[in-house]
Length: 103
Image (cartoon, rainbow, N blue to C red; front, side, top):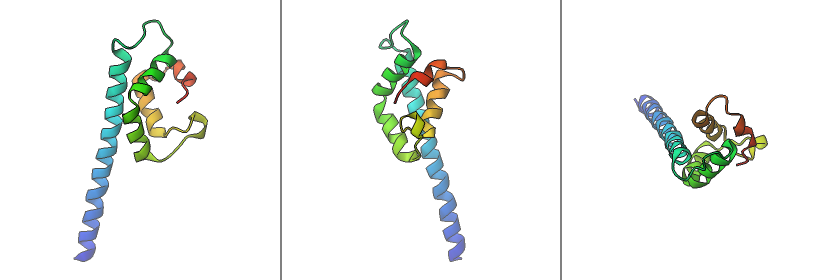
């Protein structure tokens, strides 16, 4: 009985952590979309500049996701794979300007 309770507890908390992590990624994606399409985004400026400015304005969401993930990509300025995944999803699959962004 105790083993079954412990297993149920582990399954329930793991699902909650995954949902919370997905929420953090969603918050960052929403913030980046808002900031990149808003009045603060400079028309005609390079994509890398828009992404960098949006990341600066969404720094709280970036920090939360970075703390939750913990993995770092050395070649990408020390960001986590999750943060890079969110940026790619917002910018688009073929965003050539994302390589020029330093985080």
